[in-house]
Structure formats: C-alpha cells, structure tokens
Image (cartoon, rainbow, N blue to C red; front, side):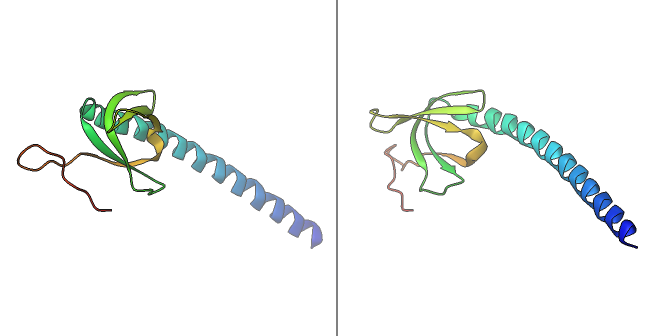
Length: 110
C-alpha cells in the first residue's frame, strides 16, 4: 500500500511539472507574438506627443515618441530635457496627447 502511494505521488508530481512546462511555453509564445503586435501598433505614434500607460499605473509617461525597436520605445519628455526607455511588455495603453480646438494641449486629470 505504501509503495503504491509513493508511486502515485511521484507520477502526480511529474505530470504537474510537465503541464507547467507546457503552459510556460505557450505563454512565452503568446508574449513574443503580443510584443510584435504592440510594437507594430505603437509605431503609428512615432513623432507624436503621446501618453503611455504601463502596468505599474504610476500616472503614465508623457512625451514625444522618438523610436520603437526590439520591444523598446524611446520617449523624449515634454520639456525635451529627459529621455526615457520603456519596455513594451509592460505597456497597457498608448494614446495621443489630447488637444483642444486651437491645437493647444489639454490639461489632464489623473
């Protein structure tokens, strides 16, 4: 009886480890595919003033999108004094900076 129980536990552990490896492989494939999709979509905003929201939810990064390459985006700050590099795996949303009817930037809350 004890040997049977040990064999069942070992079999269960092996099957769970195999399942975990398969899930990890699928998620890695989806992540790579999703990165390319995000990279292609964000290229439309190159040269425009944008607001990029990330997973951390720290209020977003605003500035002019300078370039997008190999899963990374370079954003130059609105006052042109700072540059930031953003990993596209953590980008949730990208939007163009809103403007009023006169072409001036709108004030944003939140």
